[in-house]
Image 1 (cartoon, rainbow, N blue to C red):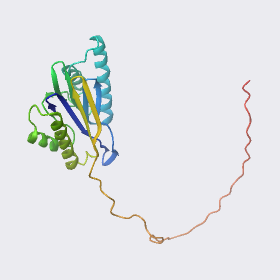
Image 2: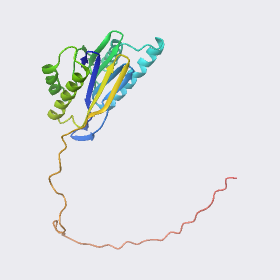
Image 3: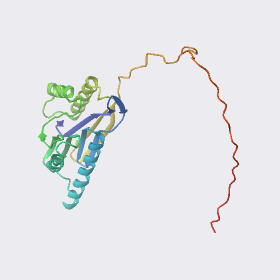
Image 4: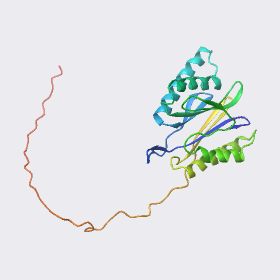
Length: 230
């Protein structure tokens, strides 16, 4: 979301593989340039590769422009053309945020290449719960602390109402001339304890048959030879 002096990006840290939690502490906020970061949702490999390619392209553009930081509209246009070319086969839903010479901006780019420019945005499996928090409490020109708390509460709402989201909350605060990547901003306070006991007494499972087989063991002598390296 956009606040008075910049942009605050937030993400959870759970990565899933079907119904299994594959990673409890993955990073979903990707570095693009010194003034642009990107939140990724979708297939982890696609978001990683896409943001790496975007970062490489913008670094070359920055060098060609004499070291100036690239604009957000340039980054969104590169992503738009890249994803539209593959017609949704790249499962990457990306949210670009940063501050350039024209001010703070947020762009969303979906897998088919459509782009939206918004003051706040959510993407991913828990986006509806987070969006409800933003629509209820967002107001223009919020302070940095208010923006950080609002983003944290929105991410927490997504964590609590979606099984694909969970673990910690990461934040990235982008201001004009400085970036603060806070990982983690808040650790998960919803840690369940195992209620059942999985140690069973001997004899719980009956032994139906018992068969013992003797193995023939052949002793092999081994010798070590030195290799001539002269």
